[in-house]
Every structure is written in C-alpha cells, then in structure tokens.
Length: 380
Image: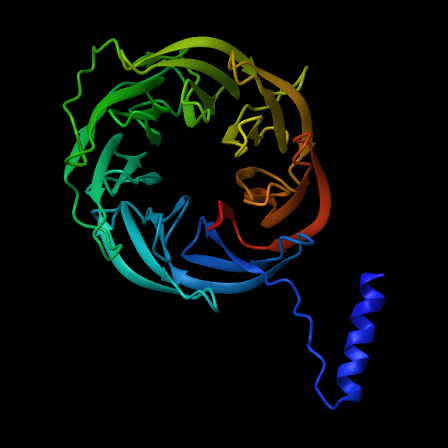
C-alpha cells in the first residue's frame, strides 16, 4: 500500500512538470582496518544489508592493532608498533576524519618511550589516553588536548614478572582499562600472569606508584597469559580473556577496596579440542546481556549469555569466524552485525547478529585485506 501510494504521488508530480524525488539509498559508513603491515585500510559498510566494500589505504601506520574514537570530535586514534630498531618504537597517532570521504589526515604522532604499543583506552573524564606497551611491559598516560591531538607522556609505570610459557620471559602489558569509579587503571599482563591494579588520578590524568606486592593485583593461574578484558555495564564484574589457555575468567569488582575476586573460570575451547590454545578478543553487547570472545585455535567466535545479577557467563553458541585466525572483532552499534578481522585468511568477514538472542550466523559479505588485525567502527 505504501509503495503504491508513493508511485501515485510520483506520477502526479511528473504530470505537473515537477521532477519526482529520488529516494536515497541508505548511506554506508566508513570502517577502518588495522593491519600487521604498514597502512590503515578503509571500507564502506552498509548497516542495512551488511554489505562491505573495500576503499583502500587511507593512512600510513605500522602494525596498528587498536583504535579509539574521540568522544566529541571527528578524530580516531591508532596505536603504532614499528620495528624495534626505530626507537622509540611505540606510539599513538591521531587522525582527523573526513566525514564525507572517510579520508584520514594525520594530526599528531606521539611516541610513548616504550616498545610494542598494543592497546589503548580513552578516559573521557580526564581526557587521557592510556597505552599498554607489550614489548616494554609498561603503561603510559598521554593527555588529549582540546583540539584532539595527543600530548607527551605524563606518567609511566613499568611492570615486571614472568611465567612458564615460552612467551612469558618478561612482562607483556597487553590490555588496559580504567575502573568504572575512575580510581584505578587495570592492566592485563600476558607475561606475568597478572591483572595489575594501579592508582589513577583523574584530576591529573597520571598514574600512581606501582607496588608490586600490593593486594590489589589479581594473580592468575601460571601460564594463562591474560590478554584483554571487558566490564559489565553495571561495573560490578570484570571479564578477563586469557590468550595462552583460552579461558574466560569472571571477577567481582570491589570498588571500595580496589580489588578483584574470582567468581568463575571456564574454557572457551570446544570439548575435546587438543590443538594450540589461542584466544584473542572479548566484547560485551551494549545491553549487557551477551559476551563474545574470539578463539584463534579453532577459528570461532564464542557467545555467552550473561546474568546481570550474579555475573555468571553461560556459553550458548560457537560459530565459525568466517575465516582463519580471528584476531579482532567489533560489535556494530546497530546490534545486528559483527565484523571480524581474520588475519590468517586475509579477510574481514561480516556475521549477522540477532539482538534478541545474541546468536550469530554467517553471511557472504567480506573483503580481502592483507593481515587484518583490527576493525574500527566509529559508531561502536
């Protein structure tokens, strides 16, 4: 009925000599893809049908594995991890976004004084970026200026420790987040099997002194290798994904004490899986009802239903990532799609998501990109 009415109106306008309006197609949005290479790629994604089309290279940046959006300005921040002989190697780049074309313009390039910058966190209350440095085993704070550019580091904390795995010869800070109350910076250390809990001052945007023996730090099972983490919307629970044992750990957060208490631990591997363990990414849906993890061992995404009261995570689905070695994925803001960077198959694949059930399903939509390791959607 609506279509017929539209046709009649269009015909009447033409009869009167007035050009009929052209119904615009839903506008696609630009997403950015970080690579284990030398560039950042862009693609156009249509959130109506899930189609994805590659645009091409839009900026130079080496091994960019994480990106953040400025909360107000059209600016995106990428980490950079150039070869170790280019000291100081780690850094944070700020790029201005051309809203019409998606083109990126370099606004600032700030080195952090530590190797292997791998993960970033934007603390809006203090206008501070916190950068975890894998190679250096350190955490650095950098102020974000009013124009969105990044200033020189204001504080640095160096971690120490090791583990039994061959990749745990020293501290490797892999992920960072600020506690919901804003008093602590938490760091997942793959090398030391720790979640470090470091004082953070939102007034100054600086880190406090590190006490290695502090009871605030969470000690994980030896050889687990914590990688990334995600907070429940309530801020009561922190979910930690371990890379080396592919486990999901659920912690209760005591804001008054600044401490984590382990609630549950479960494997993200399929029953009977005997191959190399390698978990990658973790994310929680905006409504807090579902948690997603990436498993590079069997090339899957694993879906968990969350109990908002108890924090319990119940596995409800294991589905193919659409490719090989899902390094990273992002939940689109519409709630209907998941975009997966499959490094091993040189592809970014689109999975459909049911917002009600949280379950994922395959689509034919994908683009070919060399060694993709990060997918950034500004809407997320």
